[in-house]
Length: 393
Image 1 (cartoon, rainbow, N blue to C red):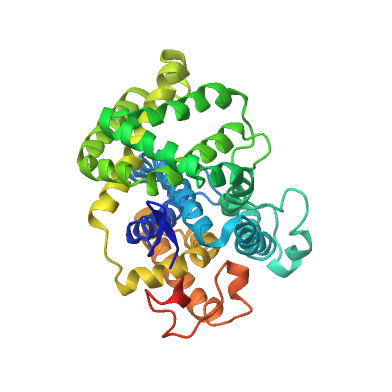
Image 2: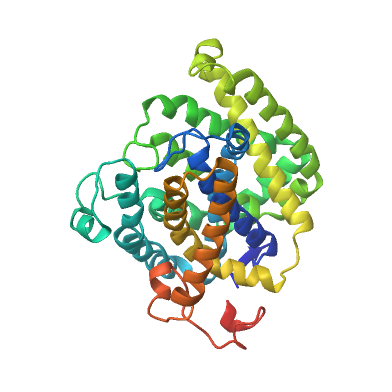
């Protein structure tokens, strides 16, 4: 179980946070499985596309990664309650840095090999390609970029997270939460996101590659701080529970405006017609209202912890690390055999979940020396790991 704070005390693991985490990463697998048939460009691409699938992906793009950032921020706030600053930093290095290095060196290379082979850039076997796996242009973190961003920002933002835990910080958050609940000013949390896009978007480069990604880093930092604030201030959670369906309605309206007026224009035409001063606030508002909607719905309805949730929560990190390599391998085989788009997508989803689960269940979870490479905690006796037991903390 993950320690958490509510009104300054330690509480049991948050079921809503775990449900949102499982849903967000489950959606990530569905999203990556769709890329080859979206027409957007990926490691491997089919000429047979599914436009409706691309529309669904476009809808989730506004809040999918932001939701994971907010969950990460909320989890950091909860983790600091039990680990303290030094313990937190050690835990971050153990559970983020080690898996990131292992993933880049071991899990990612098969993806790059299959991409090179499918695109005619290499014709040999994987063993023949392996000496080139770490050459410049081949060494990459691909889908593991998120771990790198969370690792860096966990340390950069640590002074702020610690300040939020001081008596003065708690008092300020409590005042802000009660003020927002009374005046409905929580909607203005979209404003800093829009400003980040307006100011840093035009000068950013290397999206998802850290260096020069000023907008990506600032967006992630804001959302992580938002997550700590929202998930650990009862007045805000209560407000989002009350307004969850209103947020859904506003989210539908703002996405419709984005989709009809902006996304279906010719490439870059929305910039000429509206400019970032219109595009950025609308995009930021759509993002924040969907985040409010899902957090409110989760806090309102997802309050139970069935056995499935306990197992899925433990499996999330290994699943995240492994899934895209499995997805790329599945897509490669399906494209080689010219499987049509819809069956190809469905088979990719099934293969990704099924094969990733087998690797996790047989090759990761049971082995004490493998678990740290995937950011997992040490094995504990089954009885001690039951929810509510001290060993499960």
